[in-house]
Image (cartoon, rainbow, N blue to C red; front, side, top):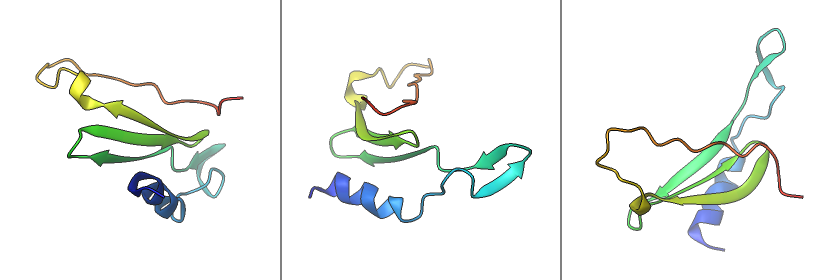
Length: 80
């Protein structure tokens, strides 16, 4: 098992499931996403509450000197 996979397994032990902490009417606090960064390679790894697949963004392909904000959409569902 590689480091990235191990990291996500460890964090699953402390993630907060939806429905466990109500913060308002029909509103719950939960772990929306989990992420880690490989600083040597410049790769951001993440997964989302509704999609446990580990995805990656190679930050070397982004213009990090730009003043523009780069936004990535959260995946809303697992692949079929």
